[in-house]
Length: 253
Image (cartoon, rainbow, N blue to C red; front, side, top):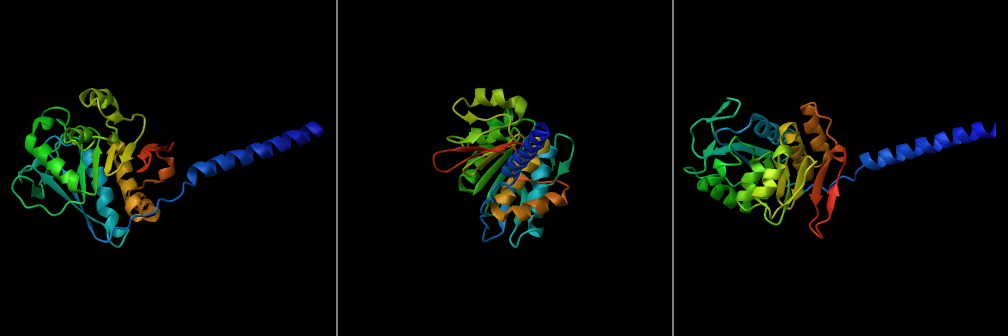
């Protein structure tokens, strides 16, 4: 009899312990939303060979902010010129602006999706790198998807910051920029104004994170539902580097 009571008691304690741990992981304190006082302009840099997923996923999320908060984001594309840009998968895109020939709107967020030549010839395009460097220095946030991190690093925007890139290109990223602190095994890294991600299907994560950072959890979860994504930041594995002491916060799936 005593043994049975002890077993039942042990099961109750174990169940309570598991529920407490689950709550500890899922009930992450909500980040205080920045709540910008203006509509934020978000420029997506596109070049021939841009990958569809890394362009369309964050654009979907950030464009739809206008339906979930009073002042959302205005998204547009920027390319070297106004000629059609052809994605790696064959999608033809008409750029909204040329950074070589047009006067651009103020850019609050610069997004650099991965492209076919992000790791080689794009890094030798001085006009492109100069545009990224100048714009990134003035923007409030700079985001890369997949190998777009190579472009940001070449422009010096990852210096002194921690970052990541496409999983199979991590070693090449480290070899190309040996002075950087690079993370792997996570979805994205947020350090200061810099947000770098692994890309692919995870390209939604950093965009939803930025939406939650700016507009709050309710807005981000609403954005997720609109794309049938069960968004919970507490279930995403990422690194956030705090402003003071560069303390890293890692969340586990």
